[in-house]
Length: 313
Image (cartoon, rainbow, N blue to C red; front, side, top):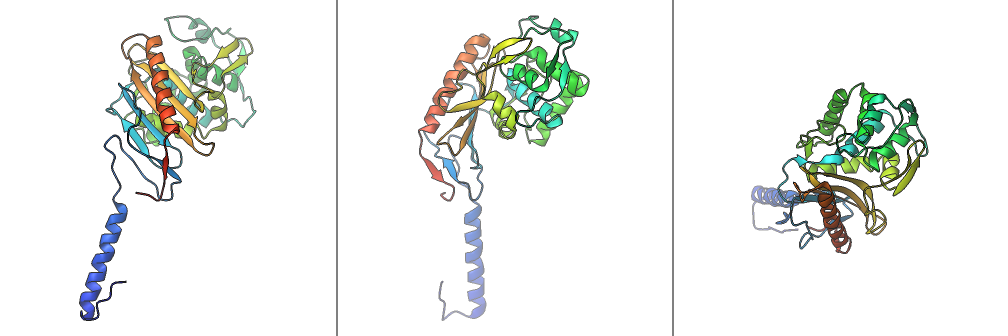
C-alpha cells in the first residue's frame, strides 16, 4: 500500500480514489486483435492465441473456443447467401417446438404429395419419398441434415407451422432471439439466395444447436438407414477427421461453398467455426470442395496452436 505520511488526509483520500479508478479502468480494457475481434468472459478456461491463423484466402470466417467467450473473425462480416446452412436453424426450430430426448424417435409425420413431387425437381438436393408414408421426426431430421434434402426441410416446415412462410417467420424470430442481427431467412432449406447470414452470426446458432443432444448426435453421424428411403450419407466429409463432430455443409452457385463445423480439441473443449462464400459463382461442387479444404486447414491449424489461460491479457 502507498504510504503518504506527510500528506493531509483529504489529499490521501483523493489520491487513493484516483488510484482505484485507474485500476478499475485497466480491468475493463480488452486486448484487440489486428486479425479479428475478441469478446472475453472472466474466468474463461482457455483462449485461442491470435496471430498467423490459417484463415481462408477468400470469403469470410469466424471461430470460437467453447467456454472462452472469445470470437475471432476474418473477412468482411457482411450478409451472404448461406445455402443449406439454413437447415441448422430449421432443425433448431423444429426441436425447440418438438423436443426429443436421446434415443427418442418422436411423432410420426405423414409425407405429403408436395414433398414427394419435389424429389428430383429443379436440380435441388432432395430425397425420394412416398406420399402417405409416415416417418418419425428423428428420421426426417436425418434426411434434413445428412443428405440435406430441401423437400424434407419444407415438409417439416409445413408440419410445424402449417406453411413454409409461417415457419420462416419462426426461424427469423429465433435468429433475433439468438442475437443474429445480420441474418435473414426467406426459406426453410436455404435454396433461395435471399437467405443470408454472416460467419459470426452462424457461430451464435452453432453454439445453441450443439447444446441439443439429438441434433448433436445426428450431425455427427456419417451415414444412416431411414426406412422407406434407404441409406443416406452425410455431406460433411470431414466427419471423423481432424476431430470434426459436425455440423452442416451448404453450397449453391450464388452462395459458393459453406461449412458450419464443430471439432474437438484435447477432449475437453469444442472448437466451433464457420467458413462462408468459398468459390462463389462457380459450381456448388467446386464451392463445397473449397469450403471443406479451407475448413480442414483452419481446424488443423487451430488444434495445433497453444492456447492461453483466461486470466491472461
